[in-house]
Amino acid sequence: MRTFQTYFAALKMVIALTLLVGVVYPLATVAVAHVPFLHHQAEGSRIAAGSSLIGQSFTDSQGNAVPQYFQSRPDGEDPTATGASNLGPENVVDTLPTPGDPGKTSLLTNVCTRSVKVGTLEHVSGARPFCTPDGVGAVLGVYYSGGNVGTVTRVVSLNQACPAAPFVATYQGAKVECAKPGEDYSAAVVTPIRGDAPAHPVVPADAVTGSGSGLDPDISPDYARLQAPRVAAARQVPVAEVLKLVHKHTSGRGLGFLGEPAVNVLQLNVDLDRTYPAKAN
Image (tube, rainbow, N blue to C red):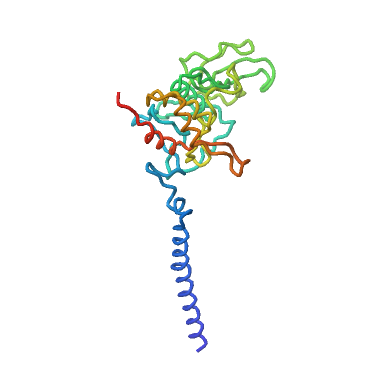
């Protein structure tokens, strides 16, 4: 009898928890989600072109920026593959391609390449510290007579494969060589070269780096202002009008002091299409 009572009590508990957790709680959650001031967020913050919480690419089939749209951060915008690259500031040396191996670019070279690309698109200088003019990491592999000290005996531009000309001809009196794919330069001292680029590049950092999640829908006001002349020209409207929309879609710091002001690219582009539709050529 006691065993039957135990099983019956357990069955009642299962039924009660199933009803509570499997029926009552989900229905309560749905009901709360339909409260007027929460409904938009509960539905994924959807707008006509997607979710205002997830960044999107505004490029053509070849990956080129569509001129009449503001561009997002270089995240890839793939909601099925969120997360950062986990590459840090010391990731500065490329693995050069060899037959059968495509190689791998460093974080520094990715940043340099993107900066040149953005500079070309926006008709500004894409120069930034530790980058070569052609958009790779300006990094030398320096060999010393005493290991890490002494006289410089050999210097290699680690990210510039032969027959490319090194970004500097000499370093501390030694001629700089181009790198040979497949050769081992691990004995060299990795030495990034700052160059003469300004400390504060024209192309802002968020234009050349991804976000931690890989899905950030926002860019900095500086990056939005940099793009405004191109977007205005493509839509044949005054830059001042485009900047008004940028200001409209700029949010302040959280609670007035957390983070930085940001511009939601998707909302801005949707508003642009509604207010200033791109004109056919």
